[in-house]
Image (cartoon, rainbow, N blue to C red; front, side, top):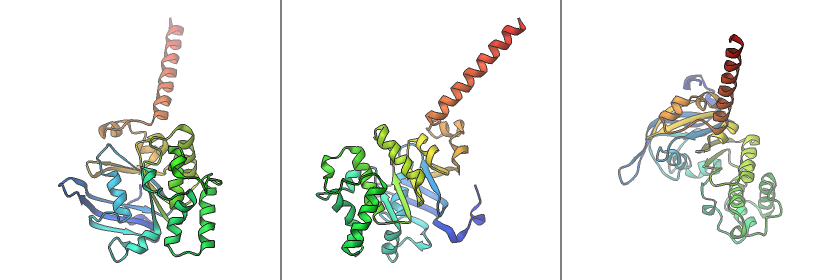
Length: 271
């Protein structure tokens, strides 16, 4: 992983220094973390429950305000820049019902663009593009109350895409999904050109979609590096209450089985 000074400063999307957050009850959710994310990166933030992952996303989007320094596309996160940052950052919540509240999916997806002051034609174009991008064309007049959880999850992503943000923050994008809708989310992340930061317990998804992984534990960054390196470090993962992605566990088992079989064959020949 490049040092901060070696990165292209002109393409920085997130710049955080000594970022901290304490809840009103005194819980320290984040403890002086520093990191950067460049344009086009896809970064997975992983860690055990209560490590500060979701709190971090709310700070990036301005929902909460922490201590330390935080810039999004060069804008310091503060009240003065709140409107500018909201136009640049979209957050997809873990629970899709937090983002779907209108009578129809069209109205849900159109809600953001309408509040941006766009014309009816521009709004319709954005809604059509977002739904088509996610395979939801034809859902315009359907109610979210009549959709499956997976369909609602994808529709909630459409509400964010219609805003055309440059940074998308996703909280547990594949949690509680069936295999079909999980795969749809994975394929969208893989082909997306936007900068993405996501939190997840689905390490196989992170392995398939993200260039980089940050491990958070007890509000601190424990590791930050290429996905292929971080998610193959079994000792590091287990030390932070995580485990190898299932796909890597299976691969290791196959390798060990093959090695044992070859050793048995070798022993028989020696006899």
